[in-house]
Image 1 (spheres, rainbow, N blue to C red):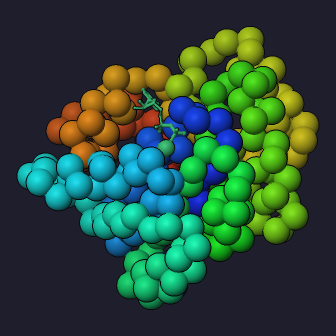
Image 2: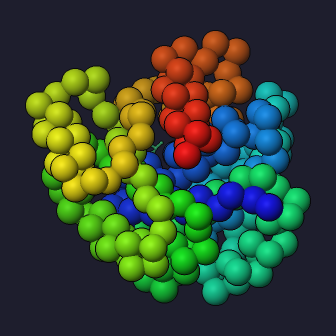
Length: 206
Ligand SMILES: Nc1ncnc2c1ncn2[C@@H]1O[C@H](COP(=O)(O)OP(=O)(O)O)[C@@H](O)[C@H]1O
Ligand SMILES: [Mg+2]
């Protein structure tokens, strides 16, 4: 039976699609991973199409585009045959994102370490709490150290929310995504690879 992770955050550009791709590849090195893209923008689907022609794509990852109301059925089709399912959602808490939250074992919320991004996540956090879903936040494009980041870490901790290891703002993430790959598939994964592995391992250990 698959573990279903919905990646949700109302703020566009927070890194939902990037996290979906990087985590799919990281998990896909050892497990069967299915990605379901319910964002009509289809960025993750486009990445999946690039992968199909990418000789260096080694991880076991499938990507399908599905309209939100068909999510349940799509999940039924992949649950038994995959170990991890990642759902990439649109940047608005509409019926589709709500559906993804309801279907998920874990709701992963990416945010830049700045107050407006935490604010933008509130509706998603509230909905996940109402649905009694487990939630984890993750800083994306995070500076290694900044007072703002520290402040948000404290605030998130004080609220009893779980914060996972962050991803920095790294060209390697953007480059691998543009090639239909993940950093875990790079010949030299480098710092981005280390960050992705730390995040993946933390998620696995949940
Ligand atoms: N950690 C990162 N380092 C560098 N670029 C990133 C990173 N995360 C996201 N990006 C870039 O930022 C933009 C927005 O990210 P994306 O994942 O599409 O956000 P969302 O899906 O939440 O709208 C994309 O161009 C993506 O390549
Ligand atoms: Mg996206």
